[in-house]
Length: 241
Ligand code: IPE
Ligand code: IPE
Ligand code: MG
Image (cartoon, rainbow, N blue to C red; front, side, top):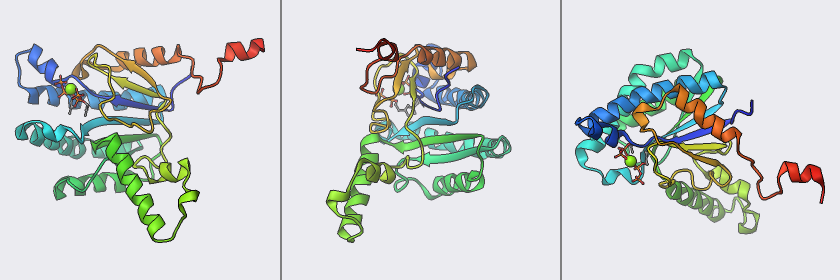
């Protein structure tokens, strides 16, 4: 079975899930955390090596303050509750996104999770928090500009590899598969550079309903895709020109 090495998920639909039940958006986000737990377990079972979860975008600050606070609180809740188990299961936790505007208590919790699990190698769980693809590229551009200003490299020495090494995702292979739940068909500023050749799979289910079976279904759709990277297909290649 051709299992994608890196799966990234845009976890969308918590609000609609709650609305359908006449519940508050908060309860949708809470249920969403349980789906995160299940997705991490499934990824491990399915042999995925890197799982990136889009938990809070750089644009999600536009939401009402109460909801933003809820989402921050739920990240803390998830790490506090699940960190020991993740560590036991040999999961390495990494965070991508801009850390500057995060409160010190969240920041120290995230650093603690990264430090504790840094030598684990069963699965890499990458949490995209306060993450935006444009912001990632912008910060990388600033890093490179500083290196040039310091005389470390010349502008004509800047390659794709220089930029890749300056992104939050350095040392993480590009996602093979990006799943978005809730039926929306857009990237919403997720992994813009890294998604260049990712297969996109849009699932109708709302994030709180995402489970092992949905994960398997998404992988099956991925397995039916022909990844060409600008080349001609394998079948055509075998036929010759
Ligand atoms: C995803 O669910 C969670 C985050 C974006 C943090 P939403 O909150 O976007 O749910 P919908 O899209 O309103 O249903
Ligand atoms: C994308 O979902 C961000 C996360 C899943 C964290 P949104 O719900 O914020 O995206 P839009 O606003 O519908 O594009
Ligand atoms: Mg949404």
